[in-house]
Length: 270
Image (cartoon, rainbow, N blue to C red; front, side, top):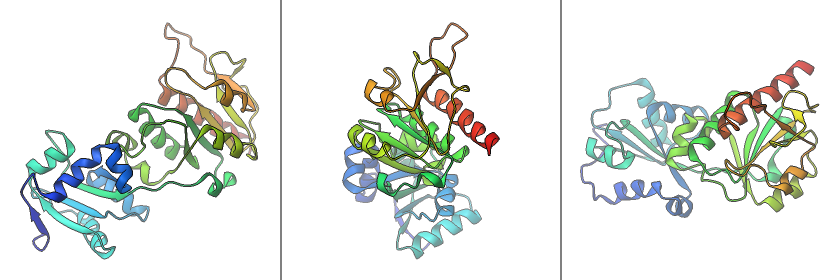
């Protein structure tokens, strides 16, 4: 790392630009986002994604993956800089920050470019607001082999620092699309498989409804659930039974239950 630029000032322009990526307006203006930790960087490299900027702490220990990250970043035209521990703390807003940070370009897919047949299951979320929920759902979709996650309406930014952290690196592996409710409804009309919604007032249980692959699972807002318009666009609405005192599940947990129920059902019929 001796040949890389060393940054020691918290007021350095590069440091200020990376810190600003905590703000949604800056992420939208630049089209970039922040990922923390060597594991995240490795996941990105495995998906063919290289940082535009790699920040390496002075105390970072030698590691083959770090060598690879620095080499691939430079080869792709990105910059590698060495920074002090206080800078890492300031950027990550943590007392024990990761020793490697990366800045990446955001990627979104268009609805028109989605191939439903490329995966047995897809997830669509309407107005999800919690970044931890969204990040966990992206990670779950990756784990279950889903084709991607579609964000409908006013959703939290999937590239916020909190959402990216919750994906545990799956943000680099899962296709993400975003659209208005109107655009989604128009596009959904040509979906070749089952579109499955979740509603507390549904008649069918989540394991009972017939499903045709590729399945599109539609989940609603954390507080309000699916709007009537999107629920009406589903081939079937199902519910997850509440057998205890709680009357609902966390959105990420409920989505995980649905994803594995649907993908397991499709696999059993194959």
